[in-house]
Image (cartoon, rainbow, N blue to C red; front, side):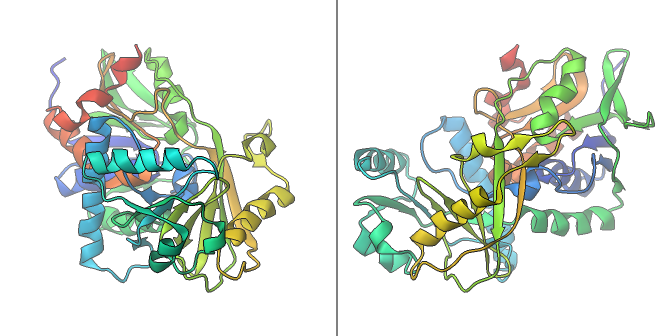
Length: 372
C-alpha cells in the first residue's frame, strides 16, 4: 500500500504532547480526532512541575531541542506577558550541604556551552530572590535567569480553544485506546468500547502508558517512569517568582497565589491500589509543604489544598522518544520526561513529520528504534 502524507490524524492522549501536536496539525490544514482515556490533562500534564529549562548536563541534541522549546514559550509569552500561567522568573538550584563542589561543577558546565548561569552565595541570592530565607541556602547556589514555568492545564485549555475553533474532534472518556493496524500500516484508533476512528496516521502520546500502547505492534520502548506527586498549596502571599530545585523540595509559583510542590524522597510512601488509584498519608504531604516553608522568608504556614499522584513519564534511557515506528508505519509516538519544556516544539516538529513524511533533523537521535 503506498504511503502518502496524512490528511486525517487520530491522536491518543489529551496531555500537552497530544494537544500541541493536534493544534499544529490543524493549523496546517489536517483534520484531527483527539481521544482521551478520561478527561484532558488528567495524567502527567495535570501534575507536572512544568519547569521550562535546559539546566544541568544532558546530550547536545537534547539541550538544543529544549532550548528551541523555551524559544517557543518566549514567543507565546511575548504575545501576552500578563498571563498568570506562563512566566519567566528564572530558576534556582542548590545541592545538599557539603556538595558545593558539585554545584560549582554544574555551573561551570552550564557556562561552557553558553547557558545563562550565575553562581551565587546566600547574601547575593537575596538580591534576585528576596522571598527565600537566606539562612537555608548553602555556600553555593545557581541562578538561571532565563528559565520559566508554565501551568500545563491552563496551557492545554488555551490550546483547546484553538483546537475547537479549527474544527478538531474531541472524544473524551474513550477508555484505554489501541492503534488499529491493517495491511502493514496504522489505520486509526479503536477505543475501549470497540469503536474505530479511521485515520491516515496515528500519534500515541499518552505519557507513561505509551510503551504499553505500542507493545502490541511489536515495538519495545524502554520505560523508567517512577511514581510522583504534585501538591498545590492553599493561596498565600509568597513573593516567589523563580522555580526552586533544592535537596528536599522543588517549588514553582502557580496561578492564584498558590505554590506547586514536588520531589522524589517520598516515592516509597505512595501506595498503588489494584484499581489503578494511588494514595499517600496526609502527614507525608504536609511534610513536603513544611520543607517548602523552611525555605521562605518568615517560614509561612503552608497548607496543601490538593495533590495528584501518578507515573511521571521517563523513557528507559532518559532521552525523549519521538517519531514514526518503522515496524508500524503511520504510527508515531511522543514519550518524554520534559513534556512541559518540549510541549510546543515537539508538537510543531511531529506535526511536520506526520504531514510531510520528512524526518526533522532535530529529532534524529530520539527515534523509537534505538530500544530495539
